[in-house]
Image (cartoon, rainbow, N blue to C red; front, side, top):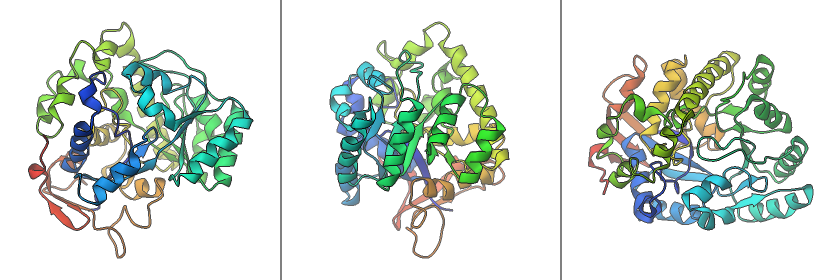
Length: 381
């Protein structure tokens, strides 16, 4: 079968406790990329906030680093003091990553920001249109609907694909009305509603549930030992820092009300995913890995299981992680299916996931660009 695609990651993010400097260094990034291959992921799409993406692509293409194909949008657009700037402050990453976030206060700032982005040859643009910073920050400003539409119109005029992070049903409606091409996260607050989903299905607006990112907020309370099974597949310092006193994951767990709210958000997200599938919305696998608790590589099979529990069939999930994902990131001509002219990125399994999606974790070999790799032999050091 085709190699898997995780269409929403943040490779400069830890995915662990997200407070220790070692979680963000070159060694961490190198090991996090290898983790994707261990889980059968041959392509990832970095969803903004990565000033180093060009160098990382080069290192992967020349063999200096081992990992999946890397595509992505370098830049994010948000309101002044909007999401995710508060998170970057909390993790101490604002100074390093802040320059690739443009803040838009009025229409006069749209032109210069997009001119800079277009001149850099990026593969699209990410717009943050969410007011909630849960669970790591308070509420934040967001773009007005009018400013959002003006921004998306100008981005489309510049031939940029527009990815939008919206989480409430109202934010999602505003993003779709403004012309978003892809919604990168679940609707976790409010019902998506048949009217919104019908528009998304008709316009083929892709929807990335990112369920595992929500579950990561409280997962350790339900299975404290799940980390043990990841040893050797995920870099140990990332796993170790999950539990430190500084860990953002642990901070959320010990904050009254956070785990309960996260569980409710996940239930709402799963309900909205079921409705989106029934409405014919194209569903795309994207984990939002790199955010606190959302582990690189390991989140992919967990995402698949949660999608299955939401009512998606095994084949719908496989399509979401291959063909639909390739189209959503603009690479459908070269990725996502097996065929003449496509990259030789393949996954060879020991079992048949059409009967049980958990077979996706029983990988015999991964083929990346024609090179056959034993996932057990890919070092994590």
